[in-house]
Amino acid sequence: MTRLTIVAAIGVLSATNPLPAMAGSEPAGHRHEMEVFSAGEPGDLEKPSRVIKVTMQESDGKMLFVPDHVEVRKGEQIKFELYNSGELDHEFVLATAQENQKHAEAMKMNPEMEHDDPNATRVAPKKTDEIVWNFTKLGEFEFACLIPGHRDAGMFGTVNVK
Ligand SMILES: [Cu+2]
Image (cartoon, rainbow, N blue to C red):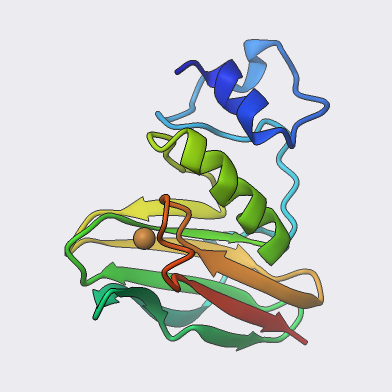
């Protein structure tokens, strides 16, 4: 699967820059070239963050985040400390619920798609990772696991920015 077909499959990038200008430092996985994020902005590691620990897990046929609801003040920077306590890989993708739903559908067609964007990461079993995020916008956002079937199994949570 090439990068271009993945981008086409997602169908969200109407103005993708075809030049490889931004490709130099990119890790594997797909990246959205127009870096506009619905849930705010990537965090600044030089600045302080409030830490919120989120566990990713499976139990009784369900997949979930604990906690599955977070309250944030507008302008607050949050460091999500992620821990996958389950047996499977899980993702944390921060966007709007609508975007995550669309993206999850796209991933059902491209299950090997992985995320390594400022607003998203994939965490292997028993591993940890972090997402530092600046919540610059009011509203309700969602963190979800977009590995096929996981969001449908309950693997999403909400962030309310007030
Ligand atoms: Cu998952």
